[in-house]
Length: 382
Image (cartoon, rainbow, N blue to C red; front, side, top):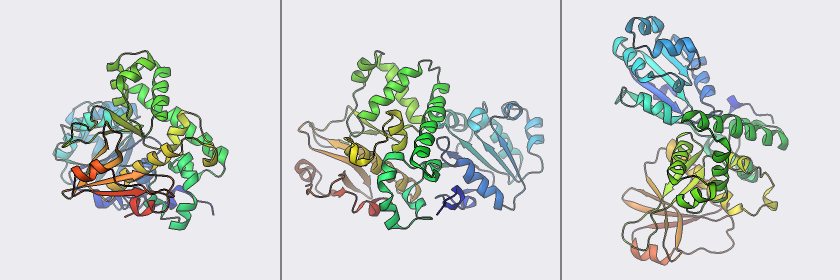
């Protein structure tokens, strides 16, 4: 069966359930993740009179950043809905959108952006209380269920661990096409976005940093050690890490501590938002039978799929990892509903994994579950 991108039902569809008069809907997410397709699907079926534009359009940039009431109102005159793709490219876009909301009763606005760093800074203060934010990630397991059943999802697991969940990668027909597509996304879109953000001139250093993170998935990262390995100062490493996180390349997870002096909290873990991007960074696309990083692949995959689950369900929780200086550890801690839930990710379910003794004795009302290939769908599907 040949799949097309429109066959996959995205989590936020139908989009109009999130759209409100005199509010801006902001759709964040990395490039090539399907934001434009999601927007186009909605526009194709809406009865609203709409105007679709792009933040790449220089004339649009000039008008919406001008703060000139006459220009801005004339630009949107007669439309019920304004949709702007890649809005992060428009300077002071937040002020322009505020003028439209203030002056045109009932207008509805959708903007998309591939950099939360740029767009959040521009729309944050001007649109306080007047925006709805949606975070769109690469495809989630729940979204694949619109095409595949649960048995087929498990059959596809080995491929997803290596090539990831970007829509174009899932639609590629051959192994070589998948490698080509995910490598192109990593090198031509994501990294270029990061380099363009904040005067980063040395692309080699950024790529070297990503490679170090790729080899340390599931392990705590020490910034001074990264700085030494890269030959740059720790402040620059922190800035690069911050940009990578705000550009949807990596996700930072901090350590949990409440009661014990032995708990590690001064380091963080970094996960890639997509396994395929992680593997493209180190040019490693071997099948699972020929890899020595299965544990890291599984942990990264499970962490990100659970992130998608929490985002789309939604499940509001504080998240951490837990480790002590005595090497007792838990991969993911979720704090919600007045309780702590611990999850350990294990690729092999053959050996039983017990709850760490210090965790059980210190946090008596906590839960502990091992997530493996036999039970993972219960963990990531609503």
